Structures are given as structure tokens and as C-alpha cells.
Length: 510
Image 1 (cartoon, rainbow, N blue to C red):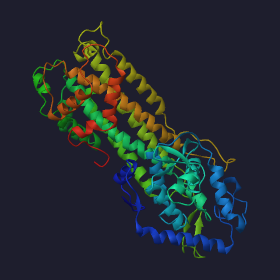
Image 2 (image 1 turned 60 degrees about the vertical axis):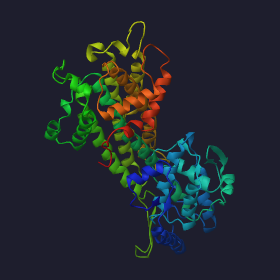
Image 3 (image 1 turned 90 degrees about the horizontal axis):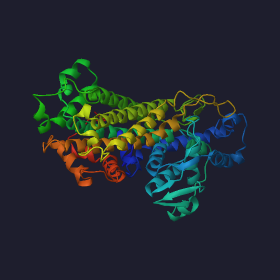
Image 4 (image 1 turned 30 degrees about the vertical axis):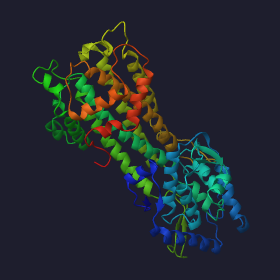
């Protein structure tokens, strides 16, 4: 895929996250070269410029001599590579590298073409820096994790080559690359910015979209299992309220249920006047989720295409011809807010799903055998899977507390307000994994419920899902080891199998 800095689409970022190749557009080469030349001209003027010939953070007032500028940039990378914890997943780390590549290629960071070529070559050759995932507060940029990325480029630290963790210098040599020698400002340009937080937030966004779509499928399967009504999906209801996500979600749910023999079997004799909220309010809740995810997507797309370095280089812009302007684009507050929105959305997807599972196992609400098993008492059926879903939903409720409301001063109070975007975005992966399992449990429970309907069938789309489920997990006739069933269903959710089996569903692109 050709990366066009400043105009990369959400679909293209998703493609990179899913392992797509990355090539930088040749159209940006001139801007890169002009920016690097501007740094040389600024240095030649002999004035003190932050990040080029001064110390960093609280040490910005310390002037660095010309002979030490190369050491200065190497030192900032090594000293700031102070992350801890488990390494970033490779797909997220690659996305972070591509985000940094696009940002540097805008021509506002003053890095040389050779430095950008190194980052591009590592992506192309499958060399992914081992980056500890903890240590960033989301301002001044994602310093620690991006420093680990930069350290690998200069031959320090470790690099993933396939599944092997290899010393960076050895991995670079094996790929025919020499460790990078950093020029003025280049160390700072590589480690300053929001690319770590943005990569994790985008990954969370893509997983949340998949889970939103999967939950529409499991929700309809639960509606069919409980012999619920499709009246709440009538477009006239949603048109009067006007929310776009709600309207589109209702239309998708109605389409999933169209032609259902299960629905036809009770359309003239519904026992319930109104279904429980977990069935009836799916368009309202899931529609709000979709709207929220789209708002987050708008913010993250802008951030992904922007420049969050500091200082920024403007060739030929000022009275002296070139300017290096210090600002605060590294502050990740927009990313923190977006991550908090995605966390709320993930929490609600799981919460509504768990309520549907709880409804199905309760004979008073569902009209089905207790805990969805033919001989309750002798068999416990889906009693404990519902408890597992409840536990996961409660975990996600705790994780959904906004990260952006927190701050802590750093760098001797020079950096006195931070965004906490990094862990706000990083938690999304664990939240999404929890929702995978919650939806898997609902899928199993709803499929089991439909099996009690005496051979009645749902719509063609839903029947494809039921068939795929039964190809992996047989009907529960009596108690058995449940964990393998849950894992098999979870794999279907994770791999997007449910979404593939039904007609087109709403998503971020509308």
C-alpha cells in the first residue's frame, strides 16, 4: 500500500494494522529534503534552538556544542528508552511505525531522507522493534515507547523477526541494514509524538467496530431464541428520533430478521406485549455505540494524518528564512478522549450482550428451559457461562473509567499536565478480548435457545450463522467441559466469522 502522508484513509490504516505492506509516496520526498536542509541552515545561524542544540525538557536552557550534537541525539534515545512491561503486539507496533513514518514524511520534523528510508525499510523487511508497552503518560509525546522504536533503528535493544526476538544490531545486519547514525534533531523527532497512543487507539477502534457488528448478529440470534418481536426495529420509530446510528442499526437488525420462520410462528400470538430492554432497545443502545465510534474515528483519523512532533520546522517561513517553532502538538488529549469513548462503547456492547444471555437462561423471561438444558438440575447448562460473562462485563466497567480525567506532573514540573492517552488506549485490547468472550457466550446460549424451537428456522442470514456455530460446537444435550466450547465460539467472533456470514452491516464508514 502506498502511504500518502496527510491523507491516509481509515481503511488504509486498518489494512496496515492487519499486516499490509507499506510504501511511502514519492510525492513527499521534496518536503522531507527541504525540512532537513532547513535544520542545517538553522544550525549554521548559531542560535539556540530547542531539540536541535539544547538539552530536553527541564534542561532546555543548556546549550550543546556543535561537536556533541550527534551524541545528544543518541543520548536522548537511550536515556528515554525506559519502558517496562510486556512488549507491544507486533500488529500495533507496525501501525505505530507507519504512523511515525507518515508524520515525519510531512516535512515538518527536520529528519533526513535516509532516516525515513530506514523506518520504511524496517517495515518492508518485517523488522519490528520490541517495545515495552508501559511508560508513557501521553505528553510530551509517547517518549518511552517511541524511544525503544528509535533505539532499534540505531542498533540498540531488540527486534522481532517473525517470532524470533533478536538483538537489534544483529537483526539489522541480517536484513542488510546498517544501524542509523542520528543527525541533529532526529532523535527527538523519532521519540516525540503520539504515535504509540494513536496506534493502540486505532487498533481498539477497529476491534470495537468488529464487535459492534458481531453483537448485532448475536443480538438477533438471542431475539429469535426468546421469540422476540421485530416491531422495535420498525424504521418509523427511529426516524422520529433521528439519530443516524440508531436508524442504521435498526435497519440492519430488521434485515437480519427478515424472512424468519421463527418470527412468523408467533407473530399473531406474542405472549409478551413488550420485550425486555436488552432485546427491544438494541437499536437505541447499539446505535449510540456506532455514533460514538464514528466520533472517535473522526478524531483519530485527523491525529493519524497530523504531525505531533516538537519543535516543528518551517522552511523559509520566517524573517530569517527558516523557523523552528516550539508548541504542544505532542499533547495527546484528543487521543485520550477518543480512547475513552471507545472504552465506553466496548463496555456497553458487552453489557447489553450479557443481559441478553441472562434473559435467555431465566425461564421466567425467555420461556425456555432453565439454563438452556433439557434436564435442569441434573445438568447446570449455561448457568456458569452467564456468570463468566457477568464477571467480564464487570471488569470492563472498571476499565472504562475515563483515563483523560487524570494527570500527573513530570520532568520537574516542566511538563505539568499530561493526557494519560497511552494507557487509556492500551486498555482497549483487554476490553475487546473480554467482549469477544461475552459475545461468544451469548452466541452459544442463543444458538442453544433456538435449538428448542422444534425445527423452526430463522432468516437465511441467521441460519448461516447457526450452521457455522454447529459445525464448531454441537448442541448441549447434557453437561460437558464448557471452556472448549467458549473458546471455539470466541475464535469465531475474533476472526469476524459472524460478520462474514451475514449481509452488509453498518460500520465506521457508514
